[in-house]
Amino acid sequence: MTRMDIINTLIQNNGYNNYLEIGVYRKSECFDHINCENKTSVDPDYEGSGDEFEYHMESDTFFTKLHDGQTEFPSDMKWDIIFIDGLHLAPQVDRDILNSLEHLAEGGTIVM
Image (cartoon, rainbow, N blue to C red; front, side, top):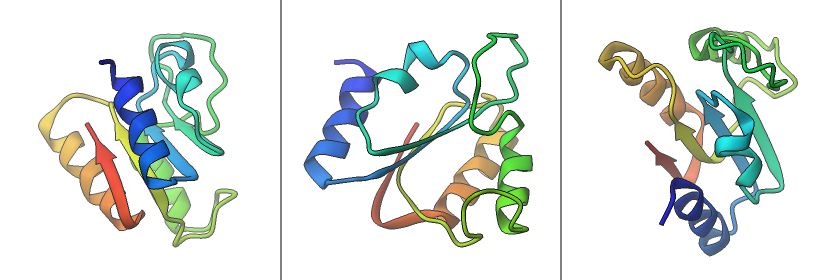
């Protein structure tokens, strides 16, 4: 079972509609395989994949802009499922978890 299988199973079994992926790297590796009505990608693209992310920036910047009303979403936006796969350093993962919890819908799921 792949991470995409796990995420898609959670989406299907729970009727989730809103998916956020933090740290996409290449859309073709996971993001493009997620079957969800509304999908949002956040990645600074340090590796130069050439993919067009909805939010081409670091996750901290994304959440700051979200809080400040500088995204297409309301500042209190809630996602049903959030996949955290960004910078794999403990302090950054901790920040991504805290920011994600603030924007996780009731009954939602964080996948890491």
